[in-house]
Amino acid sequence: MKFISTRGGGEPQSFIDVLLNGLAPDGGLYVPEAWPELDLERLKSFAGAPYSDVAMEVVKPFIGDEIPAETLQNILRKVYQDNFDHSCVAPLVQISPNTWIMELFHGPTLAFKDYALQLLGHLFDYVLEQRGERVTIVGATSGDTGSAAIEACKGCKNIDIFILHPEGRTSEVQRRQMTTVDAPNVHNIALKGNFDDCQNMVKAMFNDTTFRNEVNLSAVNSINWARIMAQIVYYVTASLALGGPNRKVSFAVPTGNFGNIFAAYAARQMGVPTKRLIIGSNRNDILTRFFETGTMKSENVEPSLSPSMDIQISSNFERYLFDLLDRDAKGLTKLMNSYKDNGSFSIGSEYMAKARREFDARRCPDEQTKGLMTACYNETGYMLDPHTAVGLYAGMQVREDPSVPLVALACAHPAKFPDAVENAIGIRPPLPPHLADLYNRPEHVTALGNDLNTVQYFVLNNIKK
Ligand SMILES: *Cc1c(COP(=O)(O)O)cnc(C)c1O
Image (cartoon, rainbow, N blue to C red; front, side, top):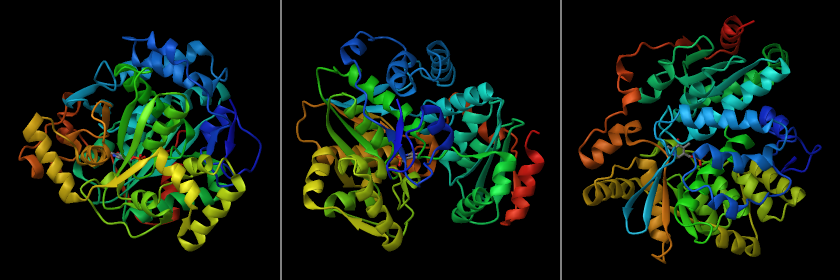
């Protein structure tokens, strides 16, 4: 399978090039040249098979023979059998008639990002080993992504990773999940500044060509195609568990960046029978406003109970827009330029009618988030994290036909957001056993000033030569 840029530039690329490069040189995002079709009848026969076997079927058409099948299978087994604390990897828990929670918090950092990043780390390491190369990954985080990237790279022989977080501005659980990792290739930088300063610092390092080449700079950001690919797998396992391919399922997904819900769309394009794909937004509702009005427009980011969705730019949305416009790269580039120049773009009513047939979107303000966390605990005993509550709320708003199973994605463990959970149900959720001593582990972090030279000097001095 080859991959093309949504902006139409360059030649089609191989999976490995797309994995290593992330963003296309013309500023677009890579998408598969065509959507492959899954053999669902064959997948049905996988009932009871390990998650990694289903994963193999899902990723195979994208990777082709670029990684030998046996190697790939071994990587998938290692990732999903060794690094997740539930033997089902992405188990379904029923909370009411025909309503399920898909728990995506059984990885090392308790958020769904592990499901993709754990695989990415192993794929990177394998490809680099084959090429005899080494990369330096730098990233900025306000919380979840940084710890998931660190956990994904900590055992990798050919990667040094530097994660910048704004000093004093992440939650204690989130900071400790990053800083308590003790590995020679992992470097935490507490930058004296805010999250934007961290992001700008990363950008400045990438823009410095000499530095970029000297340390072979790379990123594992949310637009990497391989992350989407890995996230398709759990939509397939959920469908199969609930009667697929002979029965349609609806998915409710809390999303800001459009990453996780795009993976649901990809699963549908590959043949997974889905009824509704439901987007849950918090008060930062750029996506919901788009589906209501046909206009995508950034506004200021407001803090909410579900901080991992406090964003106003939905970077993965470009991938869907490309399909919505019947893969018209020129038309898409115009819209993206308008967005860059004016902070907004609008879509005609015919296309919007199609978009509304393909997705539903609902907003869930903090009051409703907290209300649902309380109600769900009182009625079922199940603890929702605030992000999960946003998705479930949207799902319940949209649901019409109770005979269609509704699967709400639990994107984080409640213990990751203990204050919000305690506030809603009066109980502080305990960390799972593998993190129970998190507050006693020593931290490894270097505080640095918000100055490019200082940070570059630190990177140069700490990479393995
Ligand atoms: C990252 C994250 C999200 C948002 O994911 P998208 O990439 O925007 O789909 C939602 N919930 C949690 C807990 C997250 O960590």
